[in-house]
Length: 49
Image 1: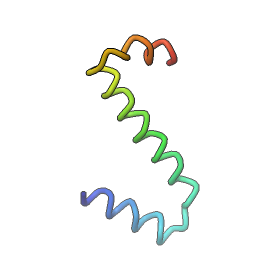
Image 2: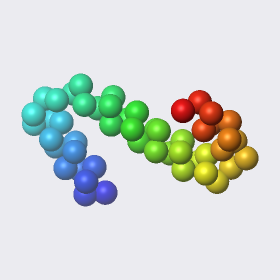
Image 3: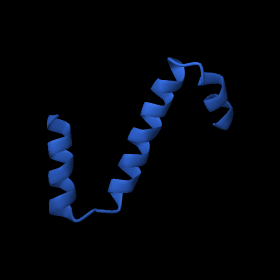
């Protein structure tokens, strides 16, 4: 959880708010890949990428 705190402070201090959607997308993509490996929908999701 410390990394999220540091990331939030970086965004707040440096005013780099354009990075937030990129980070959210990468986290979502990571969860999607993890979900695809452990579910029946794996082959379907892998064909999208």
